[in-house]
Length: 200
Length: 200
Image (cartoon, rainbow over all chains, first blue to last red; front, top):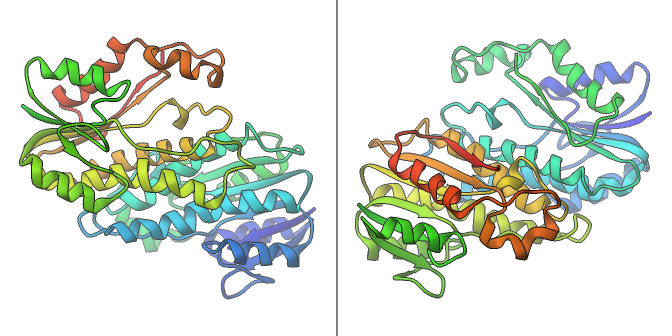
């Protein structure tokens, strides 16, 4: 398979890339490093990326920003960082990317546990994740050519534990093996519109 | 109690207004008719509305737009109709409205069954509803002064059945009595951060 992994150099992205690179042709998309350059917050940048990749069998996105801050510090504009990047960036990957997939290809988006189990400072980040969970269920009813769209929603992963543990009191770290398996389930399985929750 | 009901003249809003008017002082907010004028898609309009209402005990929002259309017809801009109106409009009502509530007041937002059980043409509408479900859970962790924030998520209601039945094959209509009770549970109960799902 020919697989595009956007964010393939990130904490989760690099282990997912490492896994799929074994038996597939993997193209890494990223803002600063990668085989193709892309800023998912800009739909023109997404279009230009797909002109370079050619037809694909799978698109995986493990990228997108949202601002973390106390509710009373977040401005209206701050919310739009997440709405434009992590939310509409991934929606636009489906809108545009569907035309760059071979029949029966797949698109895998990424969210996180905050959608269902938020912590302090995450009114914006939680919102974006929850939006994508509903979007994936809705788009699965309409997408054509046998294309499947799923979303992987991970808890705090082992490789990010030291950085994020203070934000997630009492949360258990998800092993990177389990994290990888979320993406494997989406790409190699047959489900469509699934929210792949890996929280424990 | 002094209660502001935004969208209090709509299909669901008018029965909720009728219920609460019996024993409370109700102010109706609306774009074209109502006691105070407001366009929730514009945060300045929300601020001006609260200057007129004075301090409140409860804010109920049963308003907000999102565009319904086939996935392949929705443009990037179309998604922003829902993001600006139904999503950020209700988020801004919490951001701004919390300062116009008496201690232990409540804010009740509205979404709908599409968050969990979308139908065709609702990639945008479902997304907005799902975003609000996660937002309400997140903001409940941080909001001050004993204020509670909940969201009522109704299935297709009886009074909208004829208009919407073709979009919701096999869905059962929710009685207006059940719909009213969703708002009563939020305003009169003690829960915070609850998604009040009334789907059957």
